Image (tube, rainbow, N blue to C red; front, side, top):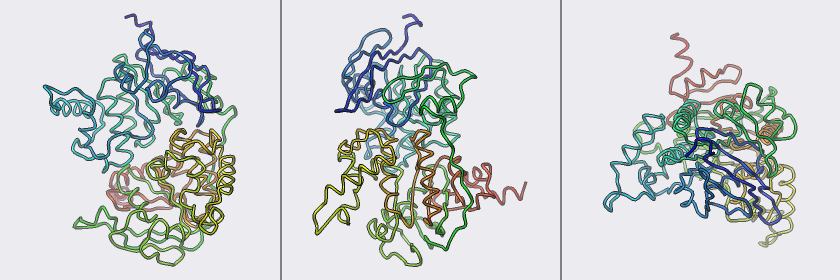
Length: 511
């Protein structure tokens, strides 16, 4: 077949959800060996379009062509059989199965048996060729979010897709892992694979793509060659319709110690001979940025302080009061709000309407409840006001959260937790999957909350964000905080050293 024929063509795709038009006559093509960046604000219709291509949704109108042939994609099995692979924002791996078992799901096997030898060999090829490594015997439920994202990328590579869709693939990867992924994409590009790369990290889009398509409110508004004339500012302006602003942290005088974790041992370290004891203090009016390679205990620490997981040892206090037997409700009553990194798995109930999710843990409290009866009018009014303030799209309080884009889910959960003026805020990956305008809005909200006296623990895999917002930085490595420093004394190099297990102070002294 001629190389001139695109490997993929979407023509006149339209998709609506009730009165909401997610895609309006969208057309897109991808050539063999071409990496196309797909950009747009949260709710612009990118993920909906890709879900249609991968068989998760059916288009109301339009056609799909693969290598010149019109195809009917009714299910994900149809998409996979056509050589279309997709790495989604949220992992769909089976939690109870191992990494290897997830890779083998759906494969025909050999002589009626699972071909483990083939799967292990293919996994090794991917690890050696692309630097994406996972222990094949690990159970998925024990993987951190970043490791699950890595598994989804490996699974897509495992099946040798002709068209590969990557929806925010680097959102939980370290810079080194991102470079490994980009090397993998370039190898796939050389093999003629067509790739659609969705990301809000504009520097990455410019670094890896050949062409960039921009969507706004369900329509394609730009299709440009990625040449030297394209800048992050021009792309952001295409996405938003205006030039975005950047939030700048202004030094702020902190108050007294507010959140104190004393001699805390994380549950996962309880069986270890030398359990790590974590001592951590965050003052009022201070943002402590917690950095570290994904899977080094940041999530466990956040869950322990929020009362989701029980500490094996130690105490947690807020404003000098020790919280006995911490639980999510007790910590919430003490003034703590928690925004987890896994917004669907731990933050929302995906099948429930947005309005219900907006008061998920506060149904039994005023003003949403009176004498044991839920005041649905107050629930709806609160949801509508937060949806409007945070520009959650579509602005439909009745829509199930699972049908919303990942960025809008994130805006909704931030809107929910910040609405109640917390004394302490634990927030993980606050801007993951957000567009440039939403990132600025959320970051500005965090700075405003800090200036009002809130103690904030910010966990982020984005070092730029850590440096932009934090007053102090703490680095976690293998379940322990190995280094803390004021932001003024930190550098990207020193934080990077700590993330790899070295004490920057000792390393720099030896140098």
